Length: 249
Image (cartoon, rainbow, N blue to C red; front, side, top):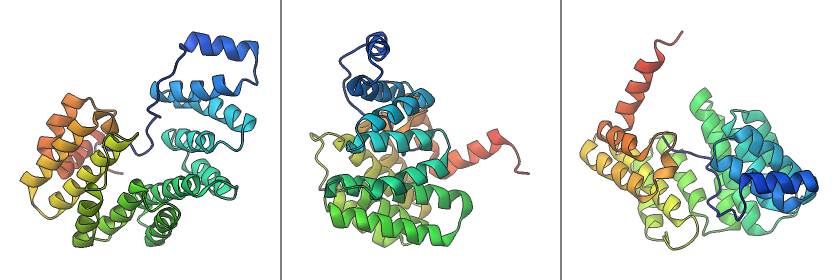
């Protein structure tokens, strides 16, 4: 349900046609490529976003957002290995502590995602190490702290995960950029804990609050669809998906 690699929430001061014209006039226009990377991501056109992310990164290798844009595009295209190789390469560069923290957090997310497909326990330990590196460089990186809680949930350390998330929930500032998404993620994973422990009523309440806080963190479903799925709960949604996909071969 959660969009782990969302498009950037920025206002783009040009139309698609204007940006395309700028690139046609000057193929080395960094700003135009950067905005096209963001605009195509917002449209869910990740292949086009990737093309412009690579161009923007080529033109300004020191801008961590072009690196993150590249990684996010690969991840949304299902190209995990390329996303992982990209984040590994970016971590070797000389960014400031906050930028490195963002990259370490993304590496952790990629590793947890891989774990949910393969169930290789070593991936969880690698993810935990990555999240800790992120927090070490930026103790205010709430998404990295949420990442640590994700690892704890996978390990069924529910009490530790709940305490961590409840503590960080009080630190979220909704008026800051990305604040609503961060709060929604915390609420969502608190809901996951409640559902896994059989407290379905509380889980549903948390899911609904998460959706209301930041609906776009739960695409590709619409907000209305998600409100309906929240009634089923996470495990109920998994059963619906299993039925829709048919038996595993």
